[in-house]
Image (cartoon, rainbow, N blue to C red; front, top):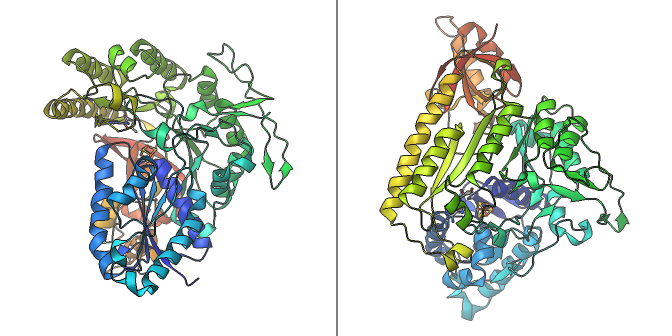
Length: 564
Ligand code: 5AD
Ligand code: SF4
């Protein structure tokens, strides 16, 4: 097969970003060339999101744009990956004949085969003179979808779990990691919660937990390649639970798998009775990674479900210094009535108790480790009254999140709410409530930020700040990793530093100040002003933790200086 050029664009969540990274790695290893210019690609892939209608609309409009392009270049292959492919199924191809390949998030291991097929089909369509004229409007029509019927068991034997191979095949090269000091590692796929508004259990299927040995091994490989921060991913990450009784088979050989339990602290809050030999819990997993990957400076995890979050997890976080004190635990609403309609499985009082328990265990501003929380809220869900909404405002004020994502309810076909609950809050009321909550959160974020002034934090330095790069006229691409920009083949960090050095030895013989950016372990963004005499240290600091004292705060960022 001649080398083919692939353009891959990602929409939606962190899980999708990781899927795209794995798919890109796999395609590259098969000889495909990845490009960031869609115009020069032979294959255009969109990894899509269905969580809100707005996310889908963006993809529809991209596909619309491709129609004309495909008339000009009938050889072009177009693929829709991820949640939209799974949700819309074959209907998507009918509506958009420009699409040749569809691949659900549970079938991504099959993508290379599908692409190969689609390329061949298109070539034969073009070779056939009769159809060549109309080939631009025809689809090669290959698809791999899981289908809603297939809800798998939570601990699959690896032999039956081809997706595990996608995670296992992750190519980790030191060259990649120079451009990216931070990485995601999946621990659980899918979701079993069935919140009534949410499409995820349908698109990503049932919860499947990855074997702890695979997770620890992946973390080790990433750290060996230079990764400095790992974020564990799961839709409900704290529900991780691997049963070792289930056979684990790789290449026909049964692998012995023993759990090791975290035995810290007494007075358990809902501990798993089988934790240890037979079951690896989330607390066990965190502890194992912390102990077995000692060179990893920072370990994070998202997203937490505010129920079933045991004290065992909080104790591990408290006792393991390299686990970050940051918890993203969406409440969604502050009204019990709404939470029940959403099928969230907890009351507002239980949520408050959870937040309080987190703070009791983990909030230690006196050692520079205040607990940072963040959340998600939905406004305008079915039947939300002014009283319900006022309760959400109260919850937001009480919870004191560092930041909160606020969404207008978007009914999704296939969900229980879509079928059974009316979308009865008018759009302008949704918009007004959305703005009101945003304003409340802005006040809270301001206050949380201001509290940090005068404190000293360990900050992971991620690179030259965006503002600094702009100021110096370095190309800033949106999104993505930490130091991933290139200027004339050099990393932008190097380019900016070279420029800073050139400035420093410039006409007036003066060094220049440089602004770096980084994060606290609570995930707060910090900008660090290096004085002219410190600027030569900038390059050496990137990817490392430095002590920074904070002297100014804005809503979503802190400003400080290196401690002497
Ligand atoms: N409408 C609006 N927001 C939604 N979310 C999930 N489904 C919907 C929906 N149908 C939000 C939730 C979730 C986040 C990822 O997206 O707040 O936590
Ligand atoms: Fe979007 Fe949810 Fe799918 Fe992620 S899992 S891409 S948020 S629908």
